Structures are given as C-alpha cells and as structure tokens.
Amino acid sequence: MITVAVAASGCSGLDLGGFLGSDQKPLAGQREAINTEGGVLAPDPELLAQPNPIPAARTNANWPQAGGNATHALGNLSASRQPKLAWSIDAGTGSSDEGRLTAQPVVANGRIYVLDTQSRVSAFSTARGQKVWSVSLKPKDEEAGGGVGGGLAVEGGRLYVTTTFGELASLDAARGSILWRKRLEVPVRASPTVSGGKIFVAGVNNEVQALSTGDGSSLWKYQGVGEQAARAASTSAAVSGNTVVVPLTTGEILAFDTSSGLSNWGDALSGSTRFSGASVLTDIAGRPVIQDGRVYAIAHAGSMGAFDLRSGEILWNLAVSGTETPWVAGDYLYTVVNKNVLAAISKTKGRPRWSYRLSESGSWAGPIMGNGLLIAASSEGSLVFVSAETGRPVNTLTLGEPTFISPLIAGNTIFVLTDEATLKAFR
Image 1 (cartoon, one colour):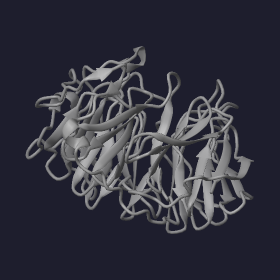
Image 2 (tube, one colour):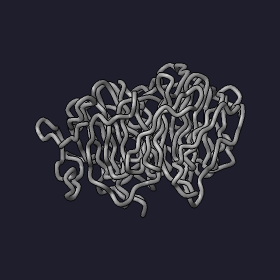
Image 3 (cartoon, one colour):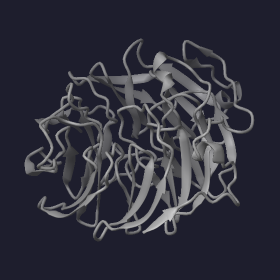
Image 4 (cartoon, helix red, strand yellow):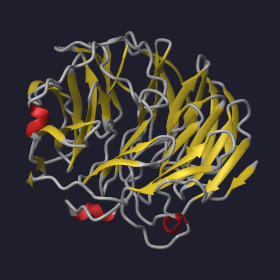
C-alpha cells in the first residue's frame, strides 16, 4: 500500500495551503459575475441567439454506479415524456432522527439495488419490483440505530458497498452473499467508484483510498484535511482513463493518477458566494463530471468551474452555488443552483442560457435527462419535467413523499427513491 504525499511539481492551479491545512483560497483568475434576481440567473443574449440542439436519446440498460457511470456523464437517455407509475414498493428503512437516506440506487442486469439507513442492501427486479434478496451489513457490535451515507456500485457481477460504519464490502450481485469485507476505520458517506479493477473511496475525514476489487486490499492512500461540517449527502469520485477526480468536504477537488496515487492537480471551489445560512458548509456534495477532457464541478458555498482534466487549468468559473451533480448533454450543463433554480450553463463559456425557478421553497435533487426533458425530484414530493431546450416545465408528477436523492434512468424506466425508502418506477 502506498501513502501519497502531494506532488508539487507540474500541478496547475494546485493550492498547497489548502492541502496542508491553512486557510483555503478561492479559485485563481477572474470569477465570472452574473446578474441575479432572487437566485435566478440572467440569460446571456449571445447564447439565446444560438440554437440549442439536444443530442438524440440513447437507451442505457444499466445504471451501475452512483451518477450513472464512472465519469458521471451520460447525455440524453431514452425515457417516456409522459410516464406513468409502473410500480411502487417499500425498499427498506428511510430517514429518521437516527439516520439519513442518501445513497442513490444502482441498476444492472434487470435488478435495482438499494442501500437503506440501516446498512441493509436489497435487490429488486426492475420489471415489477419483486424482492430478490436482502442482506444486512451492519456490524454485530453496533447498537440499534441508523446512519448517514454510504453507497453502491456494481461491476462484473459484484456489488460494492460502502457503509456509514466505515466498511467496504463486496457481494455477489446475483445472490447477495458476502465475498469479502474491509474495515476502513472511518465512516464513509461517499459512494464507491469502480474502474480498472480499482475501487475509489473517500471517508468523512477526506482520506482517499484506492482498493483492489479482488480482495479489498489497499493500493494507495491520501490523507486530506478534515472539515468539521459537511452536508448529509453521498457524493463519489469520477474516473476517466488514468485520472480519478475526488471531491472533498473542504470544497477542494483533487486529481490523482489511478495507478500510483500521485497528485496531478487540485483546486478549491469554496469561496465567497453566499445564498443562505447553510452556506457555511464548504463541501462539494455534487459529483464531479468528466467529459471530453474536461472536469465540471460545483460547490455548496463558492462557485461552479470547468477544468482541464490533464493539467487542472481553470477554463472558467461562475459564482453560483449548488449541491447537485451537473448533467452534461450537448453544449450545456444543466444544474440546480441557489437551491431551487434550474439552469442551463454553456460548457465552453460558463454562461447561462436560461434559468427557471422550480419552486419558492424546498430543495431539488437532480436533474437527469430523459428524451430531452430534465427530470428533478423535490423535497416537497413532486417530480418535474422541464424542456432542456426552452427551460420551461412540461409535466409534473406527484410522488407523495419528500425526495432528496436524484432520480435515475435505466431500461427506459425512471426510478425514484423517496426519503421514506419508497422505490417507485415510472415508464
């Protein structure tokens, strides 16, 4: 196992002060200011004058990792524009005073896997929602009560699970039998990301690890600077080629070589943007997205930025805050900013084409894109469908329960896991 030190040479935009525990610094360069009114972004006239072609929808049979895949970039997925409820089931124990449901379900080979607040993993048929198997990963010496965090990833017939009890486990995806368990010594809120025979995990203390998919043995480790407060959210690293990009609770994103664990670059997205009292939290709760050699990320209190994957060069940054993963499709990023405003941001210019206030209160999880529509779920129990082209709503469905986890799409089906652990399928 390799313990990694920060590599200072050749690190574009690398702020060693933030890594070593001194005061954080904002992104270098000019932060783009935009006109806002109550959090809504003023559109860029130049972008409005240009067409916004939406990519053709494609069918994805699986959703094997949180965020869809290792890069978190999926484009326009195939789904009904007027879906109806196909089935609804109780998938486990939901949020309470003792635990918070944060893990996004994953889908592979006709099964959807759910991790509840009691660290119980269950597999259900995607066709009709029948339970296939269920297993508890709560250690025997733990007292009754739930936890916050953890997550799922499935690859090669194995299901990898991180838990709030500081464990990483590998299960047989077909039967639910436990193949191995690894004690990580620190609670994990992040979902695992699997790529190239490695599992990438970040603990609540910002310790980043790469472990073997074969037996869970540690391959390399990096110890970041801890942060006292962070959102109860399940984020995850993004991987493309030989680079893994990890979001930390400090508001920093770090890029490592997947094999050696050497640091390629790092930067801080936390900064001076303030939209609510909750913005004292600096973490990156949304997942970074990698597409076409660029990294896109947004911080809870700071800014949204685009970086060159190889060098870490800052391509643009925008003074907005957000906790959700940006969705990349065509020429735009679609993301929820300032808590309840859905916006289309140019991938190349970092400027808004349109923005739409989804509600006056509550919060929103998502969006994802299905057949040209942006789909987001609300803390007030609704599922909204917004045109990616125009930024205007076209449909709303009632969930009946608050939802804080982004919907997902697999096999032309939209899946939603509510805060009460009700799993719903729409098609």
